[in-house]
Amino acid sequence: MAKIKRKLERRQGMIVPSVRWSRGLTLLWKDSLLVEVQTYSLRHIDAIITKDDDNKKWRFTGFYGHPETSKREESWKLLVNLSTRSDLPWVCMGDFNEIIHKGEKVGGGERPKWQIRAFSSTINRSKLRDMGFVGSEFTWSRRLGARGWVRGRLDQALVSTNWASLFRRVTLYNVVTCSSD
Image 1 (cartoon, rainbow, N blue to C red):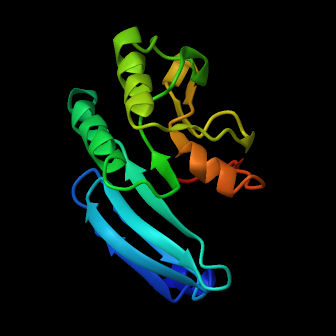
Image 2 (cartoon, rainbow, N blue to C red):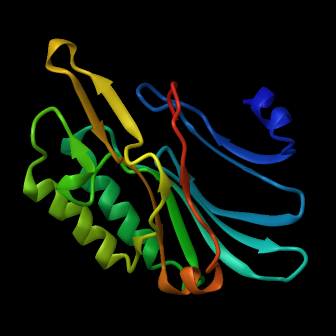
């Protein structure tokens, strides 16, 4: 991670180390930002951001949904809990390991409707919405041998209405990568 920090010219940052399946979480930022980390765990880093030049305050949460479906409800409880902690404009982004609707996955077995509904309901209860994106429709893929490929949009950027109003010109770009995110 130190090499990546240097390459991106980011001296400031926080790293939550990897444990077992988790690859860990990292939040890096420019010197022109004041970042106050509020809470963190293996599944999130929650911070308040203040920009030097205009004093805008907003909230950023990096999120990693539990990779095991049976434990995903823990992630949804965390997200709802985080939503109650502040009224600041909020963006929550990361690998949620879930889709919002069935069109966000092709190949492999069909995702159960209850599972999709649980995530969508969590987003609504958290008063967030999908920010949208430009670029690749899918953020994750895996080859299933002779059965072909399975692809999904597991990485999302979810925003509060007041965040979207504050940052009207922000665009999320999904870029194609050949390695893990």
